[in-house]
Amino acid sequence: MKRILLVGAGHAHLSVLRSFAKEAFHGMRVTLVTPLARQVYSGMLPGVIAGHYRLDDAQIDIEALCSRASVEFSPGSVDALDLQARRASLEGGEKLDYDVISLNPGSRIERSLPGAERTLLVKPLDELLAGLDQKRIGRVAIVGAGAAGAELAMALGHRGAAVTLYSDRPTPPGVAGEQIAKALRRARVDFRPGMAVTAVEQGPVIVAGPSRQDFDLVILAAGSVAPAWLASAGLAVDGHGFALVHDTLQSTSHPEVFVSGDCATLRDAPHPRSGVYAVRHGESLAANFRNLGGGKPLEAFVPQAHALVLLSCGSRYAIAQRGGWTAQGYWALAAKPAGLRREPQFRWGDSPASSTSWSIVMIAAVAVAVAGCEWTMMVTPLLFGLLARVRMSAKRVPMRRPFRSRSTVPPRIFSS
Ligand SMILES: Cc1cc2nc3c(=O)[nH]c(=O)nc-3n(C[C@H](O)[C@H](O)[C@H](O)COP(=O)(O)OP(=O)(O)OC[C@H]3O[C@@H](n4cnc5c(N)ncnc54)[C@H](O)[C@@H]3O)c2cc1C
Image (cartoon, rainbow, N blue to C red; front, top):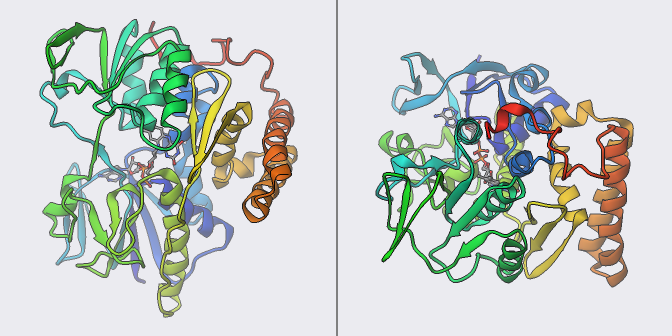
């Protein structure tokens, strides 16, 4: 029987597993190789740090999901590919043969900044959490004010850290840049726009032009790069090492290799790298694996023009941004874990109230998209807020004071 090897349990492959769990996939043996049996969901990570969610509630049980999808789970990390022999090598020396391989290992943080070895990287997420657990988090510097850097800054500030956020740009990126800058000020983050960090010296001390300042901890959240083994295997890559793919998500150099999520660049329709697009890649992959299995032609992935970005602001609200539209409020924060509820292992564990409420919210969201009427724009946030409360109370999570209570955070997230 032919074998599909899935590498990495990124958002795209989670979507594939979800599809296979919903409707069995026959005709090919599927194996997933990824380092962790349980991993934290990036959309909820700032909320875990801020104390809004328990770590357990933000984790995805990959192994259980594989078993529901009838996919073999193989713990490990790929570090090389032999494209000729169709063989993946894992750290530790194990080799896995494949007929078709699908790569979804995400991206890494760029480490070319001098002194980067003295910093804690924002990715991998489990290493970030473990690092925060071990360090004193009194005075924290974050390098990079993209969505991840800004969310982390406000989450850590909410937990009582004195946070300084460095950015080489004049405002946070995107149409909500000004709103995010305001939210940072409100969260008492010392935001330093236009201040490019040039090195991190022993201390750690941040060097930004003539300015030097020491901290307890420096977190690096600037720039992402592709895993080096994509290019070294001989796959076609773009100027930054991300795999170049056709609209079927097949490598432009090797049709038996599919690449999705952050580490892929669509040659003819490049789009931003985000969890939202990665999930859409996964939906297309699942359909195309079924087409492959059935001997049918592959379908093209067409990226949506805009994706909803929800940026949590440390305390009781988040900023929502889609295309040129921005808004903020409690409802946007409530919608963040709602995104996770679309992942099957969470949906299966859902109470009926939460599934129903999520469906109603989705209907309202579609109404907004389709009608674009003013009344739906007003009603949707209210629905989000109301139904999030119904869902949370169904799960017995306290809603009155969840953001002040530290008791919801497992003690091992931070040592201080
Ligand atoms: C703090 C933070 C918050 C974010 N919040 C949001 C948000 O709210 N909304 C949003 O859209 N995006 C968000 N993002 C961006 C989002 O996380 C990424 O765009 C998304 O995770 C990319 O998904 P992916 O499918 O490419 O892979 P990832 O989700 O990055 O997963 C990669 C997987 O591959 C595995 N892996 C890695 N290397 C190997 C290897 N060598 N062999 C085998 N397996 C491997 C990893 O363990 C992991 O399972 C956030 C990012 C960060 C850092």
